Length: 65
Image (tube, rainbow, N blue to C red; front, side, top):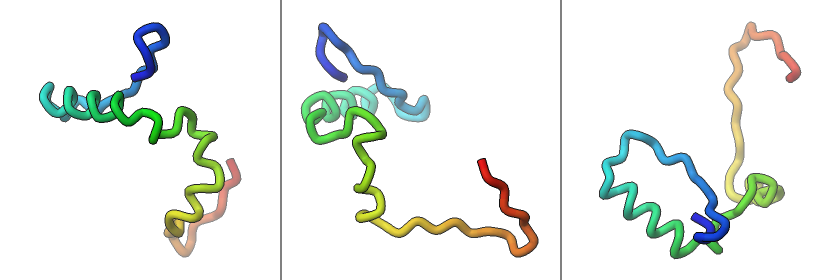
């Protein structure tokens, strides 16, 4: 990812074979301008794409982290 001068690294699962990894890498390199560079670039977008739902157990005590 990125450029040869400034490469960006992505973690791709070990469950893909070399052919799939090569295809995904080529796709991501070719269209890298379509993907966010940082997670902070996604602020405000997530809520518009879907509704988040967290299923809780009835007797669970909420914990703030």
